[in-house]
Length: 156
Image (cartoon, rainbow, N blue to C red; front, side, top):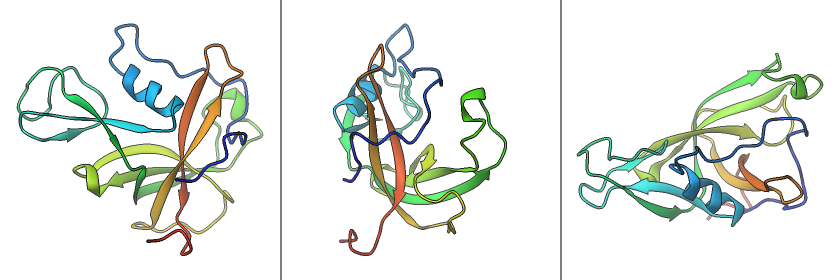
């Protein structure tokens, strides 16, 4: 896994991501703070799912388990964003939003930012790996999962 714990990709001033008051996504956010990617997996029918839910999307069993998975996947879709979605991003564009498919976790997909040059070429199917961006100075502290292209030297 790559990532520089001291590097901040996103500017300050954005809302701090926190779990819902009912705690549904708390294992996901807690995992990120520990440098781990946690997703739900049903112990009854073995279905993977993301975003978090209290029940399995497939068999409707309650309380799917949270499993630590490797933050690696492939770009399923992407968009180069030129217009800021928040005032704090006004001078921080363009940026690349990616939809990453995780084949080893049932093909679930997650949205995130692609690190690097915002004008870099991007290809559907390109392999990416997670980079954890930690913000221990925030109140409350939080971490984000960013994505970066896997270089050939990092490939297995």
